[in-house]
Image 1 (cartoon, rainbow, N blue to C red):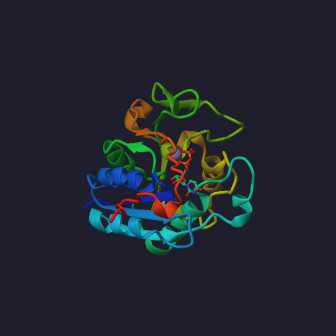
Image 2 (image 1 turned 120 degrees about the vertical axis):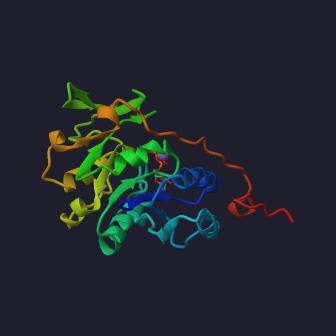
Amino acid sequence: TVEPLYIITPTYRRPEQIPELTRMSHTLMLVKNVHWLVIEDATVATKQVTRLLERTGLKFDHLTAPMPEKYKQKKGAKPRGVSNRNRGLQWIRANATNGVFYFADDDNTYDIALFDEIRKTKTISMFPVGLCTKFGLSSPVIKNGKFVGFYDGWIAGRKFPVDMAGFAVSVRFLLQRPNATMPFKAGYEEDGFLKSLAPFEPKEIEFLADNCTKVLAWHTQTKKNEPSAPLDMKLYGETNLV
Ligand code: UDP
Ligand code: MN
């Protein structure tokens, strides 16, 4: 039997939530021994999301972790999904002993082959993410089997200029680092979290997806649909036209 794969997915209530989670759940239904941690940026879990999760037959936990008010009030870029992911880490510390975890946003696109790659992770692994930043790709660069640097359209002084969908971590590795956490710092969430797992250097990372030559995850973004009706009157995973 294969070790568990913990998929930590931040999500929040909006018209696209059910379609995004439907698509993502149908990907995960094709993967063995997945435990899906779906964490809503909300104080109350959305019942349509619970029903969707129940229908998948997947192992799951449906948790809530609202963004703290002080970040919600902030103008400009907000640390989206950070309280959710930290809640996921807390769940893993309390409940998991082995396997691998991966931060998978609800709106990305995942090839099922990605999950077989991620399972190989002994410490920290990295791999390319397509449709990411202005370069259209974020990836470690491997030359003759050796790490030479990161390719990313937004380096911004980061030690690990990678996308959230571009790395996975072994549960045992996390459990050995009780202080590892994701900072509430927009743009620096990945870098801050990876630095909090230190000490380790880029050259110690396990490079997957045929030495980072295959794109198996894409940072797709869904166009906002904002009908003018109040939220409760919108179609939300089930029609309310009776
Ligand atoms: N998210 C959230 N609360 C928010 C905005 C986003 O929990 O207020 C979640 C969202 O569902 C996604 C992740 O955080 O899983 C990243 O957000 P988004 O996809 O909007 O960020 P982008 O891809 O544009 O960087
Ligand atoms: Mn996104």
